Length: 415
Image 1: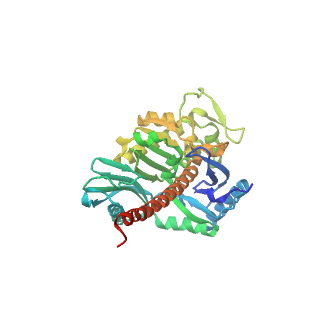
Image 2: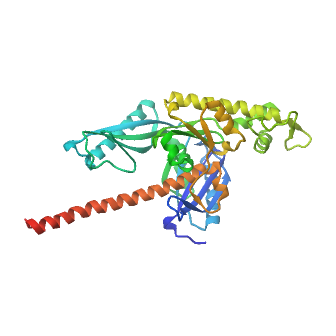
C-alpha cells in the first residue's frame, strides 16, 4: 500500500548478529509511532559492532532493506542508523560564556555551545579518540537549570554554562558504515550512538530523572547508558555479549556452538528455581541429554560475572552511585531469570526493557532486540519536531522586529 513518504522514517540497526530495518510513521497519539513494515535478517561482515567486510555487510543491509520495502510498500532511499563499536566511550563536557547586561541572549548561548564543543574535541585529542556525537544536555545560569530542547534566552545571570555529552569512538568504523549504506544506495540522514538509541526506546520519563542504567546486551557487545536528572551521564560499549554464554555451554557440555545456542534459547535460565533435581534436557540429537542443573549453573556463573563487570565499569566512570535502577534490553535480555540474578548481584531494582510508544500490532518490534531500531525511530521524529520548532522560532524572531519597526514608524516617523 502506498504511503505518504514525507512523514515516514526508516531506522537501520546493523548489529553483529542481525540487521533490522524498520519503516514507521507518527502514530495518532502524541509521541507514538505506527510501524508500516520491517526487514530482519542475519548479519554478516560485522564483528563486535565493527565493519570488517564491506561486501558482506552490504549484502546484509540490502537484504533487510528489501524486506522492509516489500512489507511496507515504501521506497527506501534515506535511513537513520545506529553507531556502535567496542571502542565507544563518553565524557560529560561543558562550555561557559560571560553574560553581558545580566540577561542571556542568543550570542551568549552560541558562545557557550561552541566552547562546550571545543572542550569535547580537546578531550578527544587527549584520549586519542574521535568525537562521534555531541548530545546537548542543557544549560545552567545561576540557580536555574534549563534542559534541552529549551534555551535560556531572557534569564538573568552573569555566567552561562552549556553541558553536552560527548560520545567518542572510531571515525573509521563510522565511515565504513557510511560506505556500506552508500553502496546499498542509501543516504544517511541521521545517526545516534547505539546506547542512546536503545535508551530512547525503553526508558520512561521518571526513570530518566531518578537515575537509571540501560544495559543493552547484544550478541558480541553490550551497550550501557546512564541517565540521571533527565541528563545522559555516561555511555559505553563493552566488548562482550550473549555469545559468551553460548561459548560457555559449548565448552562445558562438549557440543557445537549451534547446539549450544539452540539449547540456551530453548531451556536456558539463570536460576535453579524451576529446575527439578536430576532433570535432563536434550539438544538436537535426541539420543544425547544433558543436566539442566548444569546448564543453569553455567549460565548463571557467566551472567553474575557480567553484572560484576558492569558495576566495576560504572564505578570507574563515577556514576554507579547515581544508578537507582537497571533496565535490561537487547537479545540477551531474553534469558530467563536474568533480571532476578542481576537484582541479586547488583542490589538494584531491575526490569526487562521493551520498546515503548508503538501503536498497533507489531509483536516482533515490541521485543528487547528491537530497542535500538525503535529508539532510532523516536530520535528521527524528535529531530523533525525540533527542526520544525527552530523554523517557527526563526520566523517569529524575524517577524517581531518588522512589527516593532512598523509601530516605531507609526509613532516616530521613518527617518
